[in-house]
Amino acid sequence: MKTWTNLRPLTLSAALLATLTLTAPASAQEPTVPATAARFMLRMAEGEYLLDDGRMLKVHVGGSRLGVSVDADVLEAWRAENNELLISPDGLRRVRLYRNVDGSVDRIALETDRVVR
Image (cartoon, rainbow, N blue to C red; front, side, top):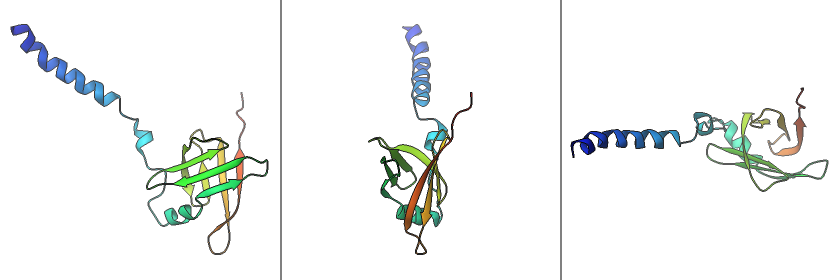
């Protein structure tokens, strides 16, 4: 009986450590949308756009997250460098937003970098 009482605090602390390691990494919890007036400009860019090559690009701006999908149903968590440049998680794709005088999006451009091996 004495062994069980000695092991009980150890199993509780092990369970606590296990639940802490299962949470998302710190980089996934960081906001990807700036907390300034740029958020309003990004919200104006929310919607679906047809690229020159026929693919569909979707932009969704949440409270603190920015989601972009290119020809897919799944939104990836991109980050906003500013209110005119969105960058993919791997840093190899960028979406440039070209705006009108009133701030609405006139056109977009998807830029990609190739990986050099």
